[in-house]
Each structure stands twice: as structure tokens, then as C-alpha cells.
Image (cartoon, rainbow, N blue to C red; front, top):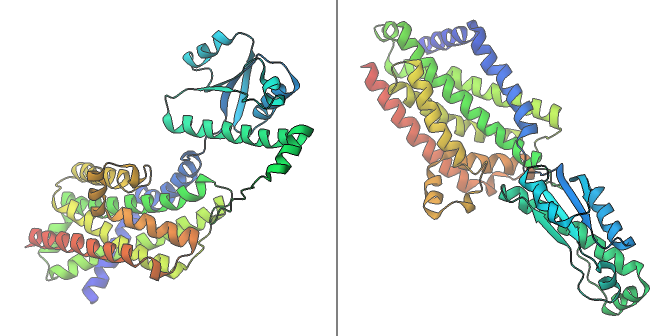
Length: 374
């Protein structure tokens, strides 16, 4: 094992000798977490809204006041001409237009069906749906308050005995998308770092000729492979620990579950990414080729992992393909441990799937790598 130790030592010296590599290892992940953790979010805020009130009564003004004072909307104009509302969205000046027709207060008092019109820019369907949800919540709260304020409606409501729904949100009480997204970013960054380091590091030695020099030494092939793998595995563990600490300091998001279990599962995942990196090195002759192949594999892995798009929303054929993606399983494991504190017993299906896939990829990569050595 002394030969392996010297190889590991050489790899660490080679990595830390390069200032660019140190930046990739320790600076780039922190910048990615800082920027992406704040930029990648499903929350929709600062929606520009134009208001139209054709009723001009206390009740209609109160509804518009609540909408304008909401943290989600920014009122840009109170329009007097109903026909001009659509022009604001045509010119991309507003995301939403809310119109209250005449007779709104009269319909409320007469217990008719008061109407409110919301026109939403549907160019971004996700944001449009969330914006309508915000409006519906404000109107629903307004309805409940109107019932309690108006004597006639209040007496009727008491006779009906309204049912109140009190929701309880577990694991993310404030429904902050950052809490859900940031743990996923850890998996993405770990994938990028380990795949790129392994693939490009080995190919770089091909280009400068040091790999051929090692091949003519008395070192056995398994020792050479082990000496190449261990440093990148250690760097992967160091990377995830640094990111976890940075996430806690920056966002206040700590690990709810077992940290040793999280590191154990990360080790299984690192086995897969190292295997993928070695495989890329066997099909690449230059660092440019390794970069292209690494990005080719990772773009599919990231998009089919459920990080950006829920897997349940994908076509059925694509959902079956995602079972071949180890990042899919690691994302589930990471969020379960990070947010819910789930023990290993609840993570066995994903763990076994990741082990099987990791061993298959790693074995294939090592076999190809040995074939290149002999």
C-alpha cells in the first residue's frame, strides 16, 4: 500500500499546486451557493399590478387597499379606463390587472354574487398560477372579514356555523422555497465538482505525458486506479462539509437528521460521480473533450433529477428514464435527511438503487480505465 500512499500524495500536491484548482474547489462552490441560493426560487414576489375600481365604494376601496399593501404586489397605476388595462400587459408594464365592476358593494350587501376580474399575463404559466393564488387568498380573507363586519351577514354566518381550516406546514413552516432548493444545490455542486475534477484531472495527465510515465513503472493497475480515486473522494467529502457549513452560516439551514448518515449517503453518491469521471477520461483525449462529455452527461442528470421540474410532471416515458439517474435518488435522500431528519430505514429504496447504480458505473469505468492502461 506504500505505492498507493505515494500516488495519493502526488495527486494532492498536484491539485493544490494549481491556484485555479484551489479556486474551483473552495471558492466556486461558495459563490454558487451564495448566488444560486438567492436566485433560484419558486416564490413569486414584486408582481406589478394595475387597479381599476368602477364601484368607488368603501368595500371596493378596502379590497384594493389590501391587494396594494400585500407583500407580493406592487401597484403601478390606478386606471380609470377599463379598456386600457390590457395595454399595460401588452407593453410588459404589469403582470396583473384587477378590476372591480360597478355594483360590487351593492351585491355584497344584497347577498348576491359580487364579481372581481383578475387579468394575468400568462406568458409564464407558473408565475401566473401563483399570482392568481395570491389574489384568491386575499379575496377569501376579505370575504371572511366582510362577513364578520356586516351585522346581517354576521348573524347569518353564526347560524350556518362556519368551518375553519387551520393548516399546519411541517418541515418548512414558512413555505420558503429556499429551504427546499438549497439542499438540492448541494447535490448539484457536488456532482459538478467531482465529475469535472476526476475526468479532467486524468485527461490532463494524458496530455502532459505523466500518465504514460506511471504506466511504465512497476505500479500495478489497481494501485494506480486507487491512487487516482482516493484524493478525489477525500476532496468530495471536504467539499460537502464546507458547503454544509456555508449553507448554515449564510441561510441558517442546518441538518435536521444525522450528519454521519448524510456523509455515508454522500459517499455512495461520490462513488457514482467518480465512476462517471473515470469513464469520461477513458473516452476523451483532451481536456476540451472531457469538458464537453462531462457537461453532456450532467445536463441530462440535472434536468432529469427533479431539481427544476417535478418528475411527476414529466411524460411517463421520461419518468422511466429518470430511474437511471443517480442524482434523482441523492436529491431525495439529501432533502429527507436535511429537512425531515429521516433515518436510514425510510431511505432504503433510494440507498439500494444508488448503490446498485454506483457499483455498475464505477465497475464499468474501472474496467475501461484498466484496458487503457494495458
